[in-house]
Amino acid sequence: MESKPVIAEYSPAVLELEPGTYWWCRCGRSQDQPFCDGSHKEEGIFEPLEFVIEETKRVALCRCKHTGNAPYCDGTHKKLREQKEG
Image 1 (cartoon, rainbow, N blue to C red):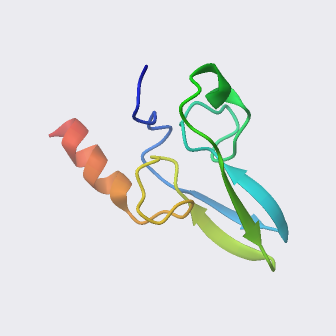
Image 2: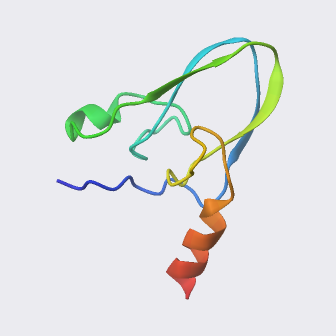
């Protein structure tokens, strides 16, 4: 079994989210990035991350799945892209 998440994209999803509860995909396999669609259940390793938005706001959600500030992008995708291309 793979213990590292799949890199869905090398860029964040910049979205305006309404107040509510969301589930961020940690495995990278969701077809509804950056949100969970249940694809993690096949592997059984990853669980989605629940997060709450209190007021409408624009956010940058991580899609490389290696951020240190989940579910938000911290720029880690830039380093990962350099490693891939390098």
